[in-house]
Length: 256
Image (tube, rainbow, N blue to C red; front, side):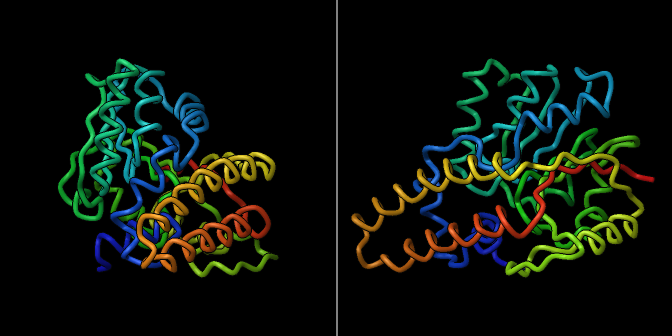
């Protein structure tokens, strides 16, 4: 198994473990750093019922934007888990700000270990964290133990259309992804495709803030200039992939 630091840095589109302790500083200006809470709220509204009794698990929750807005919308209970304690601290503060701290619980843990002992939930969310739990077959097989009967799994991810080519080796072709979902005993029920202009606007906003903070870190830690310059370049490359090579989608998956 990869180290926790490697897993987190990879999920943030980086490649150097040394970046791990700097991520809170780099991302300090951003609250929503993964999937769109609004898209997830709409999918939950469409495919579940009895909203206030729902229990949601947000894996790799970042600063808690999805969980907090979900709890605010539906008055439901949410558990968010992330490996970066500064993110969890901010999530707890935001939950108080939104008046949902009685509904939201946030923990600093390794989600790869947490899912082995967690109870079951009605909604499980993986919001733009990449293949932290493995490919789709491995991910869904592991998560099935944490999913209530009739529950749903929502995954924000990108995939490659059948005719395309992709420079990112972590991104799978759609046909392979769908087969892995079927092999796990589940089915893709619904998805929301992120439009190119929406993706670009989001990427530009995130990138400008991220780049500014990386340059500040270069001033503070000149010996690490390559670390931060490389991360800026990795973000540029990832944005190019997301905007021109792949389909970005929020998918809702359910057992057959």
